[in-house]
Image (tube, rainbow, N blue to C red; front, side, top):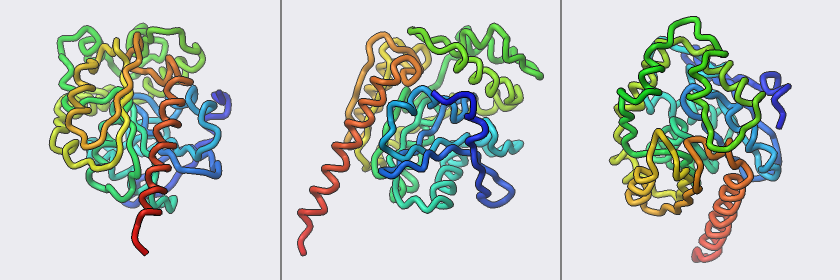
Length: 281
């Protein structure tokens, strides 16, 4: 895990209209995998996963409003997040990638797969849902609503916000809290309301790519029943339920999640190659 130089490794690309996307690119020869982080996280969300995926090219952006990417006053719809990812891929010359999203990133990945299908060869949804609609009376949501600028990264709220069922590296969690605290409270509220209002049933029905769903059985934000509802809406969806994991299985069991991603990607590549070989001359 390379936390020390994480910020130094970030590059930036201009996507037009003054938009700047920060991202990390491992430049590894091999298939391209775009990893899209969740709400209030940054690309560092995948720092624990990276060591388990040494044979593929990982591209890990900071979503708009997060990390070192641009932070507009508005435009935080799923379509806006997905457009940024499409612009990044276009800017890097990526014709197609295996797109993996976590939480908000999962919703963004589904939006991208439906609206720019040529960019998404296969899709993985970690802790996603069709209709998040998180209860605003939930204690976590109520505590979030009480956040005021400047947000203290040492605030006790983050112990709950980043809570995991299994022990996770403390330095990693500290870096996540730092990046989350840098987001203004108004954007916490603005983006959270966008997530709560999402209804991706129509979007999911348009997704034609092979898809993998990874979900923790103990996810306190998006229940496992929501994950099964998502699988039912997808044309081709495999489901892996991780017993005891919460909302962040790629932090709690990065090796297990990486293995699932690798296996799914390998199957997709074999099937794609077989389909090409069957095409008439």
